[in-house]
Length: 138
Image (tube, rainbow, N blue to C red; front, side, top):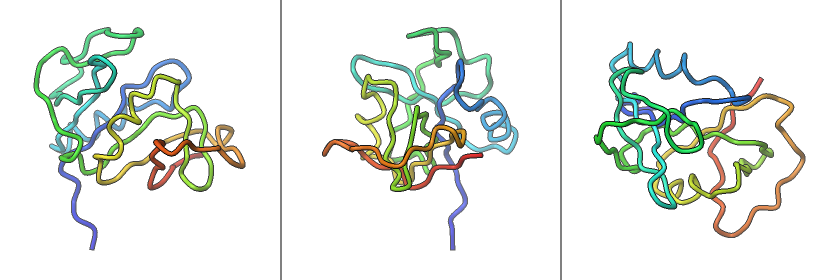
């Protein structure tokens, strides 16, 4: 049996990424704890938000939480990860900074969301790359 999700970690979409605003709002409406990333040094720290009012423009022009309410990656039941491309094995490429790679090994369940044109035959993963458990795409 699958346990109900209590906490969702999710990126705040920008530019050409799959839009996550509806996912975030749906989780907030259902009382699910929502944690979004903030770049801190060379890694990401996820912070709980209670509404979109908890976000402001931050690093790289991405909307980030400005209140300090950290959530550990181990406590995030379902992590939604951005990607630039992916393969059938769950390997992904991001945007080259390695921020998600620094925390994914600590996340119980990792999912990417993508467009079908982002799928590729094979990604040559490095030993430190953490594959996703699933990629949802259309």
